Amino acid sequence: MPPVADLEPRLARIGWRAQPLPSDIEADLAIARVVAQHRAGYQLHDGAAMFNAQPAARFLKRDLDPTERPAVGDFVLVAPGTPPTIERILPRRTELRRGAAGESHQRQIIAANIDAVLVLNGLDGDFNPARIERYLLLIQGSGATPVLVLTKADKATDAKTALAELHRRIPGVAMFAINAKSADSVAPLLAWLGPGHTAVLVGSSGVGKSTLTNTLLGQERQATKAVREHDSRGRHTTTHRALIPLPSGGCLIDTPGMRELKLTGEEELDQSQFADIDELAQSCRFGDCGHVSEPGCAVQAALADGRLDPARWRNYLKLRDELAAAADTLEAQMRRKSESRVLTKALGKRLGEKYGKR
Ligand SMILES: Nc1nc2c(ncn2[C@@H]2O[C@H](COP(=O)(O)OP(=O)(O)OP(=O)(O)O)[C@@H](O)[C@H]2O)c(=O)[nH]1
Ligand SMILES: [Zn+2]
Image (cartoon, rainbow, N blue to C red; front, side, top):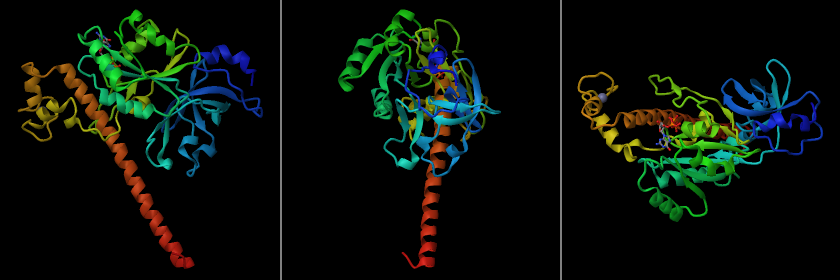
């Protein structure tokens, strides 16, 4: 492997910060960063290009603690090959975990080596201190710094009141009210986006994550509207770039996994700011109304006569789909957990019969 000093300008683009490397590294290994994780493998970036890689066999062992597997944001050592293989994970500075209050064998790393989590909340009706607090729970203990960003300040009449309320409710956390479209307005955020820094943007759909990304980039590089394909189960695929080097020297990580941070599957739409839409959608003539062209659709009627804002409706649909997918995952996890408990019991009983233990 070339001396790391030679690699640093390139690695700097992917949020690398000088760190001592293990002394026993084989010469043919390269440093890269995990930018996405798929069922079929990992997507890595070495500062020059993105490429696919497979984890070494030991990462696939079933009894391995999931937190010891490569995660998005990890700097890893990669062996050449077709495909290249992830051999080692370099020590993490921070670990954003899912299920921090759960059982240890269920904990997963959502992202590693994240320095700041920018929690976006819109001042256009999306403002929701309770949701911000839930994000903060997820971030707490990760080592990453939360930064609260209230977007659409240019549209709000009460940005100061919102900030004051948030200050009261969540003291000691940096917070800004910004117009995500204005470079001047987002400038204070650059303090968390300098060389060697990695940030993620989290927040509800439509809050301004893509807009802020574009402003930080200084150009329209990321499609503001991600491409989504819906199917009957309400899953979607979002295409966007996973790691985004910024002119300020830092980088953003943006993966579907990171965006899933926002919903656990336990949220109830009928007890949210969308309760009115949820109620409307339940009052269609057909119980399984798709709200597209069915006769007697209460949603289409409300859209037609202006009672329902189309943007809000689209947002509701997006969130409902996300929630459905998250709930599916949660349910599958819980099913697996209860199955393994039953299996463990059955195994214990069998062993007890065989060896006379109880
Ligand atoms: N006036 C104003 N409009 C904003 C601001 N931030 C975002 N918008 C607008 O809000 C809409 C949604 O913004 P996006 O950046 O696409 O939101 P997002 O969080 O990326 O949404 P998803 O991709 O669905 O997760 C766009 O029309 C933006 O132009 C802001 O600070 N001020
Ligand atoms: Zn309908």
